[in-house]
Amino acid sequence: MKDKYWFKGNLHTHTTNSDGDADPEVVVEWYMRHGCDFLVLSDHNHRTILDYGGIDGSPLMIPGEEVSACILGREIPIHLNGIGISHVIEPVDAESAVETIQANVDRIISADGIAQLNHPNASWAFGASEIKKVQGATLLEIYNGWPGSNNEGGIDRDSTEEIWDAVLSSGQTIYGVATDDAHNYMDFDHTLANPGRGWVVVRADELSVDSIKTSLASGEFYFSTGVEFVGITNLDEGLMFEIVQERDYVYQTMFIGENGVVLAETSGLNPAYKFQGSESYVRTVVKSSYGTRAWTQPVFLK
Image 1: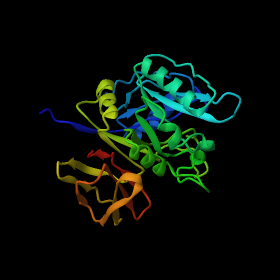
Image 2: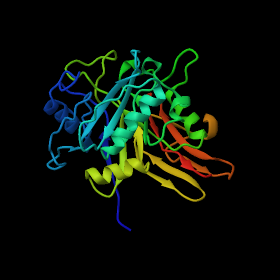
Image 3: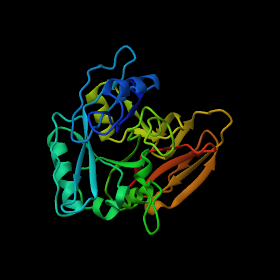
Image 4: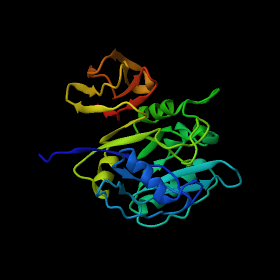
């Protein structure tokens, strides 16, 4: 069996080709200095192309675009990333959130891209009920580093994790991601959309566009705001993985099942969970005492 390798990457960031404050080359330089193996420059309705090739320490550039649409007659953003697209995608505005999402998912797929649903809680644009009616979306932002993303929800509003569990519990497969959605590279503050807040770590055959896309499409990755894994093992009888110890942090792991129910909770660097046979899926979230997190993808058992 061919060995696979772990590659860190960011799937959502902006440059001066849309509403970012840094030129594309400056953005790539930042991610290169911070250990990124691959990068998607996802400018609004623009396909920013830089050919670095993933050699000499530069990140592999995966063509992308934030397809930025709205519901007709309303200022509600319906944004999707097209990852690995072959051409620029013109956004489609439609009468409802579902119609708008579906039309743009279809366009992304027709451009050989992977469709990612961005910041669903931005302006409370859409939730689980809408996502359940959409076909073809592969990825959903669970963590978005832009301050207006409302990842944790609000009054009578589900968090993005709750949205994710509701979709998974309906029997639909969609994989979670963490992204920067960075716009601000010149000044750093918690009120700004700065880089370095969320990323994915993909297990792939090689550092190539096709290999990374294949692993994203099959959920062979985890996503993080700082917690790292040495490895993840999915066995017939259960899950186990090893957490990288950073400084003197302590780590708490929750194994989560249908409807967001916590199936088990444990501490330490080597959490494990034995399947009971009644679960429809199991996913995990690890929280460090520093406040960072990492999430694994759901393992489906039914």
